[in-house]
Image (tube, rainbow, N blue to C red):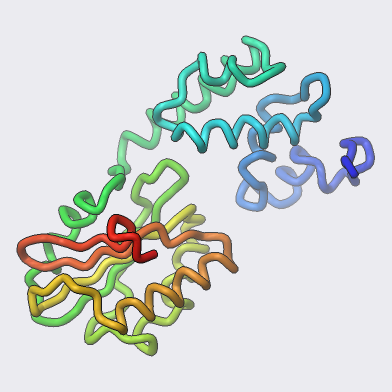
Length: 221
């Protein structure tokens, strides 16, 4: 059954939640709903916000055009322009300081310091909703196993940084890129933990001096 905005308690409405709890407690569509202010015929502002965000995610935020937003049924030029302007402003602000990580090759480049290490270094890249780097942290040093890499050690920083997703990576001192059974087990545990928390592990990169292996590219996730 569809829930009407007038049936929600005031504390559940986006503006009230923002004032009471701060922006960190609001979901993406609730933040967008504050910007839009009102819905359109057949969709309240929260439903409209979800629809717009679904469109943006399918296209990828950096490739969305004004025409894409205008193609959303019922969304007029004024509201589409509002959303498009905010997307552009967000891209400009993020571009000032945050490098993008869009591929396994980007991770390989960012891991130049550990590719030749004689001990395994397990690192996590915490990304925002635009795949821009928030922080890189070393989670463990030593032979990779499930006791060294506990989900808590990976996801606590993610919650602190309000990360949208995580890429994990570690080096193989042997120079061999084939994932070990421990590599696969750790990856599986972290993916399962991420599903519960709502923060996706989008790739696991194994590194060596001469190259890398991406779990995502090899369909191992």
